Image (cartoon, rainbow, N blue to C red; front, top):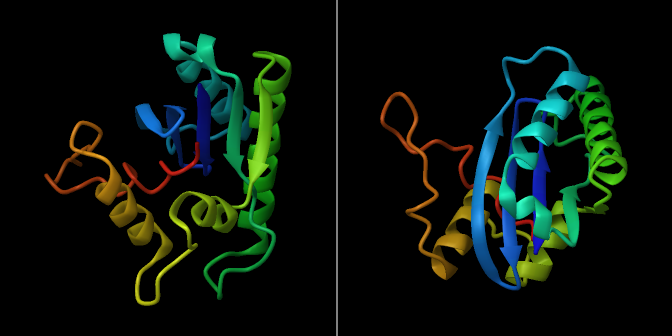
Amino acid sequence: MVLGLDASTSCVGYSFTKGSDIIEMGFIDIIKIRDINEKALYVYEKLSENPLIQEIECMYIEDSLSGFARGRTSIQTIIKLAQFNAIIRFIFTFTATIKVIGVNPNTARKAIFGKARVKGKTSKQFVRDELEKRYDMTKWIKINKKGNFDKKTLTHMMLR
């Protein structure tokens, strides 16, 4: 069993997979937690409550950004995300003794879907479309307070 994480400082997506089967997936909302260390500990605690954590052989986590995304990402955001990823990696490596492997999102998409993106689609939409082609995603879809599809649901479920 593999645990895949897509960590941001407001939401952490996770998936438990065995081979090409998705066993469970979801996200942990951490936007209201202020301290970066408390955010990481909260994620660890939430995932540790899941009985599947006992079966994990290794964990994949999306690597931190290493460059600017066409004016949408500031250096402060990159640094904060790198710090958060480092804390999560440390906690899972030394507390849960799980081997943690960083993966570039483009590399992950290429390995899973055969390509990293499609012209005219955001990477999030590309991942969602590709996952929906392969799996019945209805049991994992979350609806937000307005009754719309919660965009956090599938934006980070491709790591395995």
